Amino acid sequence: MPRSPTTEWWRRRPAGRHLRAGISPFRVAILFTLLGTAWILLTDLALFFLSPPADVLWLVSTLKGLLFVGGVGLIVYLLLRRELTRRRGTEEERRAAERLFQTVFTGLDDAILIVAHPERTIVDCNPAAERILGYSRDELLGRSTRTVHVDEQSYEEFARLSVPALEENGAFRTEFMLRRADGEVFETEHTVVMLGESTDRALSVVRDISGRARDRRRLAESRALLEQVVNTALDAIIYLDRDGVVRFANDAARTMSGVDSLEGQQFDAPRWVVRSPDGRHLEPSERPVARALASGRPVTGAELIYEHPEKGPRQLSINAAPVEGASGEIEGVVVTYRDITRHRATEEALEHSRELLVQAQKMEAIGRLAGGVAHDFNN
Image 1 (cartoon, rainbow, N blue to C red):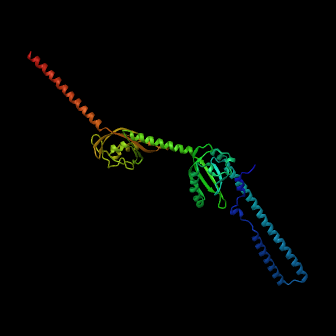
Image 2: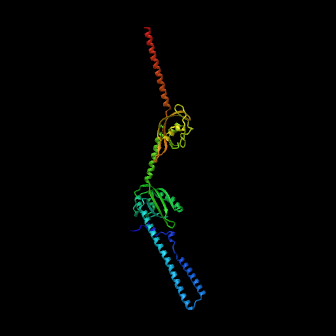
């Protein structure tokens, strides 16, 4: 199977320090010199003190030389054996690393470009790069990364941002717009790292996040639309966290409460003067929000009197519904309320009118009865 340029580079790249550490010729020479000198001095000193006969001295000298040669040969054999074993292990590690790198390089879903730095020439790419960028491998190799940038300004801007980071930290990450072969501009998450200190190549990983960016834009548009709808509602709408702190309030809520900024305030704080419709002071634990949090069930149609800072007592109709999170625990409360002061005043006026009408009808009936009785009495 032919190797790609990246695999060839990986195979020929400088080995790490732990791979280069081995037996150097200088170390062997020093070791041989020390052992040889020690052997000669010790054996000659022993012969000097023993003073053997001439024929025995000749034999001992011969044996001494043979032992030295044999000892040195054994040491060299052991050292060479250790070095060859280490090299075989190193080669196996290198091949395993090469296979792993090639598997990751070809199997990753993100586009990978190997770029010559600082020329920014593409020297290799994986299959995902062909799919994401829309160019074939042959069309990308040897070309500048300018090919995949939106325009010359974008190309220069990327260099302005990435080069200082690569020189200082050896890595750079950003979100950047690129252009496919068909001209489509799309958003990417870009990660660039230098491949070691002694190489001029950089690995650029490009992730297509156009779908994610599109979802973010749609979510932002949906939130903006929802906020617009909520702010145009006539009823006050407030969201509180489980501690009763206001996290969101629409315009109607600010108007009805008489407070310009509700966010961050405790909705059921004692400083909010609240009474029941019959005038009794309501403790915080008796108010709809606290009841909804304590019971975990919605509280609907609750009525209370709120002391508006400018308008005075206002009668409100309140609904409070707990909001459950993914775990099933209550995370907050949605509160809606409306000012029914005028409605209640109208109802009271109508009730008073009914009472007056009934009273008038009663008086009219009594008058008729009295007139009839008087007529009968006169006859």
